[in-house]
Length: 131
Image (cartoon, rainbow, N blue to C red; front, side, top):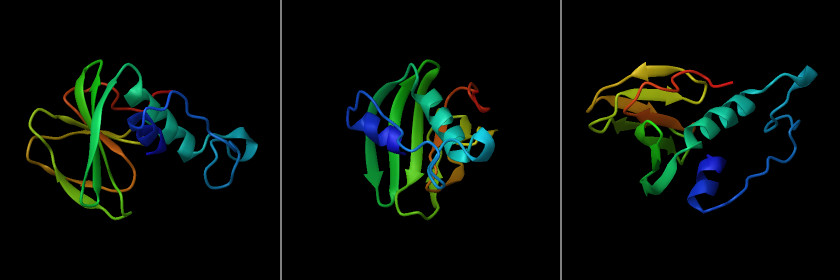
């Protein structure tokens, strides 16, 4: 979320301080990558080559629109820590989670959106974790 919100605010750079921090670090024991690092990499892949089109907050749900290399996409997350339902808008066929898991969706389908961002897109690219 921090990367996306920084992008929304027009930040040119984003620095991740304390890479080895227990809760928020990107490197765990023995130099192993953490789930935070994987989430950072996935979010970054959603942003690369994309144009930011704005965010809106509706109740406890934030949604940002981006135009990616493969077409338009939405990135959504819950702002209150709880899961909320989102109806898939027309034209979106792929849902990708931060862990890289992807699934096919259809317009009008109800999906649950929690505090971890997910991406809805009209394409089937980036449905797995980008290394």
